[in-house]
Amino acid sequence: MATRATAQPSWVVNENTTMMLRVSFFDEDGDPVVPDGAWYRIDDVRSGTKIVPQGGIPSASNSPSATEDPEGMVPFPSLAAVVDIEITAAQNKLVVQRLGTEERLVSVEFDYDGDSKHGSAEYRYWIKGLANVT
Image (tube, rainbow, N blue to C red; front, side, top):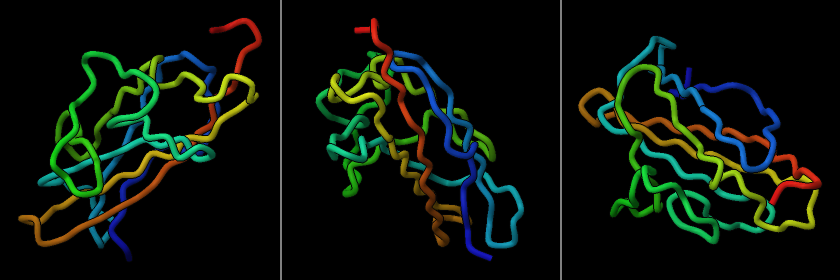
């Protein structure tokens, strides 16, 4: 069995809405594991815009800062077998206002077992544009 992290299946969130992404980490046997290190990034699928760590949309002041990680990921706010990531309302702004929806991709990487093992996962969600929200 492959190492994986899990989260909710794809879902839809209204634009400019804060949301929580719950990520659970498992080892190769499917047992919960606390990673030694875990990182994530968020991208707009259609435009390729980096939402986290950097991009055309400002992030909230309490968002994690970019690291030296070569993939351009940011560290998780804490390390546990289950971690919630807050995706801010500012990070859930539409990149292109004229589009009705945008797909976002959250990529996750983690190390465990003394950094000797590695896992990765990705999660997708949709942002629904609202007619009178700016």
